[in-house]
Image (cartoon, rainbow, N blue to C red; front, side, top):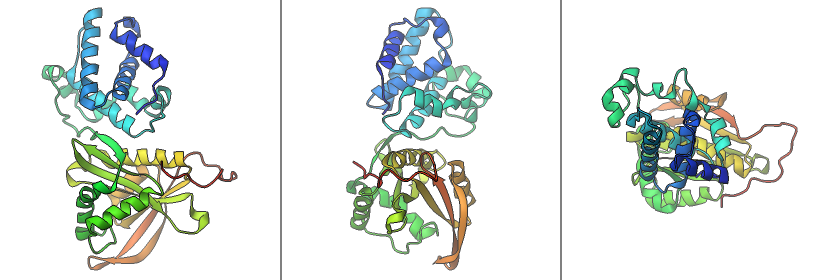
Amino acid sequence: MGQLTSADLKFLDDFENCRIPRENWSHEAHVRMAWIQLSLANSFPAALEKIASGIRRYNDFVQAQGYHQTVTVAFARLIEVRRLAALASQNWEAFLAENSDLLAKKPPILHRYFSEERLRDPESGRRFLEPDKKPLPAYGVVRNASAADAERILSIYAPFIRDTPVSFEYTVPSVTEMAARIEELRSLAPWLVLEHEGEIAGYAYASKHRSREAYQWTVEVSAYVGEKYRRLGVAGLLYRRLFNELTNLGFHTALAGITLPNPASQAFHEGLGFTPIGIYRRVGYKLGEWRDVGWWQRPLGPQNALSAPSGPPRRPG
């Protein structure tokens, strides 16, 4: 993931062979080096080892002090999460344009997660210390789901059916039925999962809004996260990647329906660019009450009301 160029590979070679002048070894250069290593590696631990050993080697060469393990690991994880949310075709310039907050100085991005006292603790320089303000986002592998994932996906979804009004289903589907749903929806648009250390942390997908032809550029989107991975940025990561892929396929609008009240979900969707467009009043009866459903809308890609679509949305694969 990440479209590397010959300039990126030369930059990495110059870094690994200590040919980058010390005055050019900026914070942005650190971030670029980590992005390249993460794009090249087949696992996060392998990339992290190359990032950390490379910084130590360069510091020794230029006689610089101050390698910091917690800062190095935290930035690598943040960069990896942002990288996973992007399309494979994204290059360094596009990545930096979308993630300029990684370079912010006032306040630094790490201050969202770590107190100044934690980062100044000498022990945090020697080994990675977990954040003391809020957890870092979860990372892993974002991939397309398959029917083989049905049982693990169902284990995430089933509690939302049994215990909440979030889903309007009454009966938990069988694994076979869930597998069939995955295969059917994958023919329309991506169904993505985030896999962390062999476990599916969450998933996101798009479904048809309505069947008539004029609606074909509009999809409804949903994301579900396993209990132990909530509040770790999993849904946001999956949604951003899903939006990028939907845009790339030629879809125009994403809709999200939210059973009300649900202020956390409302804030989450609005933070990702959705705007409220209306409420269906008392349209579903679940868990002993009539339920309202609010609708939110988000554009996909450039919006120009005067331009006609160039064709129907493409299908995944």
